[in-house]
Image (cartoon, rainbow, N blue to C red; front, top):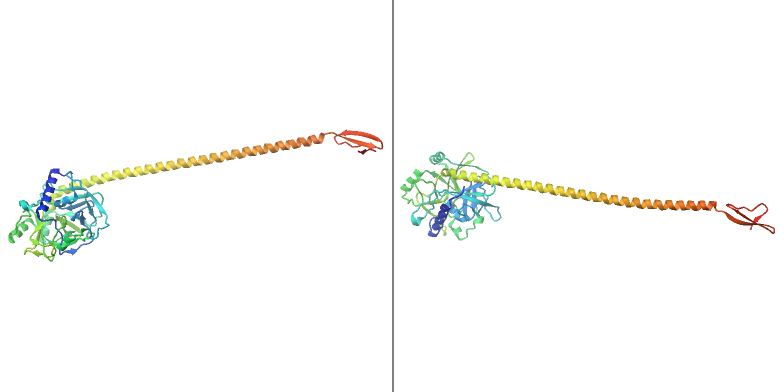
Length: 393
């Protein structure tokens, strides 16, 4: 799903207008409890909070998206950290690749008496983040039961824990903090504002809310985007997103705070009205995963092909080396055999010569001179001997 460019740009302009006009900023838990290790509270780039809904989907507030450099088509280059981290100095960053906001979203602008409407958003990350708790979007029936039964509503955020932190926010090493309260139906919200004579400039009569006080904690700069939930039977039922509230003066730089008789009241739209938007985000995630699986399969096949080609090249090189070694051995054997043949021939020729010489020597006639007194006689033969009575001279 692609976000309508003109609506998003209008929203962002309103967000910047709110900041410039000094209207209510993002909020954070003050006077709450340390919640380091919480499985759903995530810290979003730009001192903002969020709630891990599924492995790749984070629920947050629409008015904080300007901190993520959202583009008109919904693309973003923001990032988030894994949930529950206190020190994120060297923590892994999960890249945000898509943002979804309701087309009906309107940011509050007190200078024009404009109340926030449908201040809800979804951001999608590019890889799975471990999800250790089952999460469901509470139905309206469940929410009304939570309100009737005064079920404890929890919100965990990464904002400032005291006004004094404004001097040195150090959001990178700030732990998440928890506040608790009770859920108010829209009808209860109207009655609450009537009872305490509160101006309804930051909420509409369709908003739900949660009430808190100094004991249970209150929100301060940086908690916008945190999720309100009720936990039952190991399931966290998400009821709304922190983004707007009033009737308190807390988290001031001098460290002082004060609550009205009615306490602090946060207001938000019911999340179950955004199920189609959540479905769009889930569809995007499914398509993204399929695309990544295709790319991973292509990479695997390419790696296998490369490995096969390298193995074949190695086998060919080994075969070539073997053939060359065999050829060299054959050439050396042939040369040896030729040398041996030459030696044998030379020996044979020498033997034949010796035999010929021996044969010639054996058949060669010689002449000797034999004498007897004054008589001389020559004898010629192969083995000449002097006649009887004669001596060889």
